[in-house]
Image 1: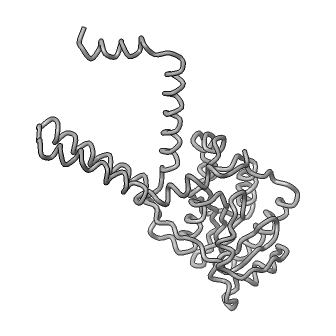
Image 2: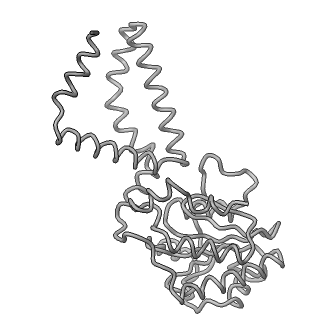
Image 3: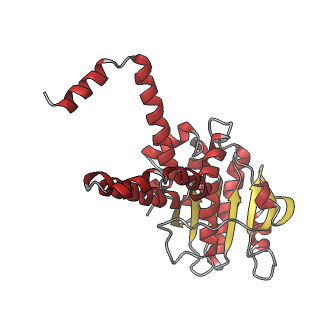
Length: 281
């Protein structure tokens, strides 16, 4: 029997229940972190970093390059310092998701159902008139830092109010509307733009802002394109386009019935069947 086979057999023979639990816990942590990185720029950075380490290992050990191996070993300290800098957005997002206290998203109540209906009606009218719009629905993660960038309203949601805000004659029409607790919290808000790999180049600023806010928080963003009148919805860094008002209502109701993306229950269900993927044309 080869030496490596004997070593593997010896390792398994000495394993007890505590070692097995230890392995499972570490595997779950790594799986969760990789799932959070998937679809972000951090995923590309991670692949590049692992590729460089693999090439360095091959050059240093297989070809026995002594000087290169020494340089690689002594670079790990600098690498540990560089990793938090390179993955700063992903680490911030991960810590924020861990900090969510809820086990799931708020269920759709009659009040939220009314908001969905009003929003769908407003989006249909905005789409018919080719008026651009971006509406963000706050969920468990607070959006106060983005509300502070706009004009606070604290108004009742209505079709007429949304139409007035996104009218080109209104100075607030270029920003986002944030809805919190069933009320229009603010308008003209500035949102972070997405720079994720795979973002379609033809998407405008509103769509990139919708992707950006849903990548960093658990919010739901609804977008109406000014150029095409297409209605879209974004959640968890994903986007579905070419919607009508009825389909928009169904998506919003589905999202509010499911666990929030980022919680352990929400992460597992999102890995099995991403919500928005089911509604793609």
